[in-house]
Image (cartoon, rainbow, N blue to C red; front, side, top):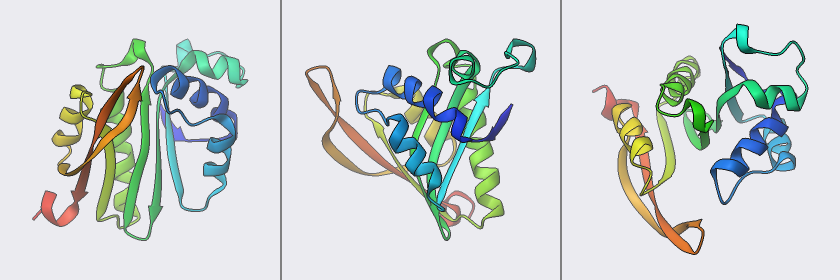
Length: 164
């Protein structure tokens, strides 16, 4: 089940961010983002039968499947982060989150989306290409993974180019 992000989600998202990314968004920054009127974010929750009855941060972390964080200004959006719990990766969660985001964006007359992705994140690169994203630039050494620096591939999606 995908729904809009709520304040109760920020602890769980911050924990997953820290697990997935070296440069993770923390709970305070997530709360600030959520308060921004141009913020757009969604969470994917595992099926109802697996969900606890409580919505405490600890319980939510146990059934958070993934999330998508973006900023949407007029007809343009920037995807800030997409994260999927390791046990649900490569099961279509990222695809569902992107589909939901694009459905929402269509209702807001979104015509352009940009994002950055680590050049070694082959599954994400493939997913974005499947959605019509194209590379348009590179940020050298943008991501840190241990002692290594990884380039970011800058990608864009334009409705006019994806659907001529």
